[in-house]
Image (tube, rainbow, N blue to C red; front, side, top):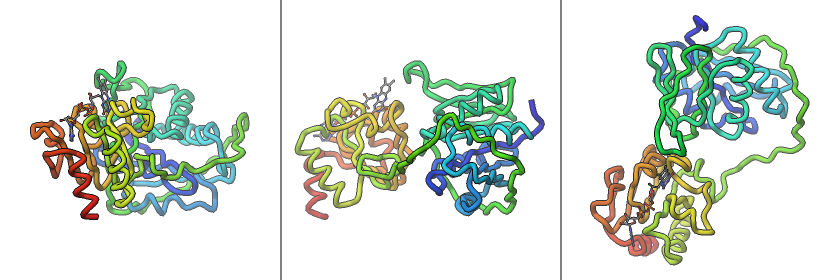
Length: 319
Ligand SMILES: Cc1cc2nc3c(=O)[nH]c(=O)nc-3n(C[C@H](O)[C@H](O)[C@H](O)COP(=O)(O)OP(=O)(O)OC[C@H]3O[C@@H](n4cnc5c(N)ncnc54)[C@H](O)[C@@H]3O)c2cc1C
């Protein structure tokens, strides 16, 4: 156990930039934590990720700076985080449930012999106890999971579950004094950034989402035409992942992705809670459905009661 009530957030270094999901976690940690929120950065001496983190108002930024972190593998980064945490165990340590976060967090957890709740959808504290919520048992129930006996209490959270909000900028920035232990069992020869492409719904600012009521070839073609005109990405509800042209990566919802675009247009989607939970953080939600009582309208800012194809044709004329 520890007397340190800090909540640490690991700031993911993604090709010399902060992964946006790390900033979302800083905002959430500040909202729920009574103790100080510390953003932990791993970077090389010539990197400056702290400039991207400061505007989000963590109480402190701790930087592990070392040349060994140049193209470091996940074991090396985990070693550095473990060394830092062993010096002064924080109360909680949060990671994004990105590919990188899902790899580093369990390595840290096993070295610190503590508990990790992976892929959470919500977090809160009761006093100093972290309550992590996540879908379980084949996504059929939401569980609240705690780690009452060991510290830090660790959790990874799905990207886009929370919103990053700027706050009073961080003034306390310190560099940790520790030597990074390189783990060279695996070396990284080449790395290719996962840049936004037209099927990456996680980073999309505009999304057109298609459901079972919008699965005809014509509707899909017109939705793609509108998407191309307004710079939107196509996403789908669960049933459409059965069509060969869509993949699970494009699915929004409880067992898919959580998205937070500026605009989402839902076409022919009924609004089951397993779907809406994945898009309720969008700034503006427009929904189109032939059924005026469709539940999707309850979570929408604008509604169009009518046929998806009719709506798209009208939109294409306007564009
Ligand atoms: C454990 C579990 C996890 C799940 N996870 C997910 C998930 O991650 N994502 C997800 O999406 N689902 C998920 N589901 C499934 C979910 O419960 C719903 O079945 C699914 O979201 C329904 O998809 P839909 O709205 O496209 O289809 P439907 O519910 O069939 O709705 C189709 C809608 O289209 C409308 N419509 C019909 N014709 C037209 C037209 N011409 N123009 C306009 N509107 C029209 C209809 O009125 C209807 O409202 C999960 C279910 C379970 C049990």
